[in-house]
Image (cartoon, rainbow, N blue to C red; front, side, top):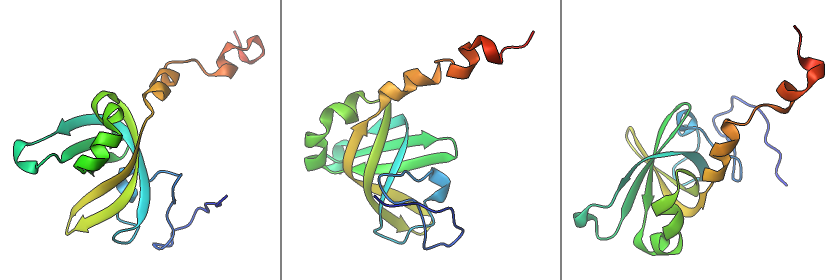
Length: 131
């Protein structure tokens, strides 16, 4: 198991399975294998793109552009179509200021959204409430 250390070294970034935030996408080098996660805010499948799907994910720091090639789309079709929140592992592609993640694996983590509304366990404990 890989240990991730907090560091300001540009050569050190969270490796999969840990996810990078949108703002951290400038840290890894071109073609680095990374993971990102976020809410799906846009799905595009232009007719001129020959079956390529473009996803935009949003996290607390910004947006992440994801490219899903046709063959990968067929493998992860359900997650791509129905997922409200996805975790994507893939290769970082940077051209100037434009950054994309070329998807290799896509996981639907929408079930985690329900946990956002659940009260924290300590909030339910009568020992922690003061009045």
